[in-house]
Length: 219
Image (cartoon, rainbow, N blue to C red; front, side):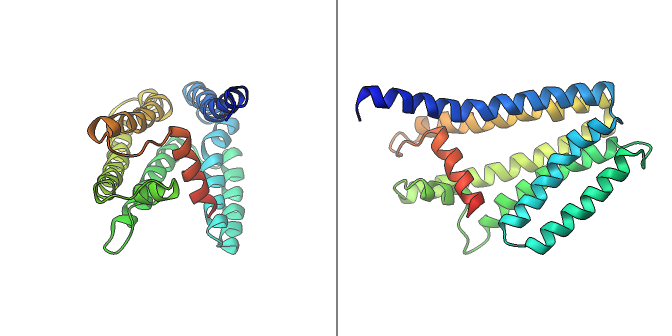
């Protein structure tokens, strides 16, 4: 590829990775402020619980369970409207429940691929990126899949313990700031260590991994 063409392509790839991260950072900081200063405000309820409802509906829709997706969105939307009108005196436990549900769902998503006869999820992503499937790579991706399962379970347990033992502000800091940073650190740390431990593996960029994950969700 000509250098004049390669440079804009590299810039586009960089923006494709940085733009979602910037949006996520802005969302996390905004939700953190809302939780601290107005945890029961309708905007806070919508900002915290709304994305989870849309995510659940989208996942069911992509899984071609269209009727169930519409039912979940309709029922969830009604419940969300009731909460925003002050239907519950204290909505903070619902925030915790949403985070725990999200971590549990991710643990289940990764863990179910580890059953006998299945293909570990990280192995699926490696194949989607057309990486050369050596036995060592297959074993490594299975280990990483198990590590992600343990990570999500651990984060869910910490989420519950912090809410039970510390003031809500500390839980909000964990959920909105520490948790996303820990997720990024775990992902980036594995990526960097992968080629230190196994320099023989074919290289795949973080953007390649993100594309493979997105294609999997659309499949």
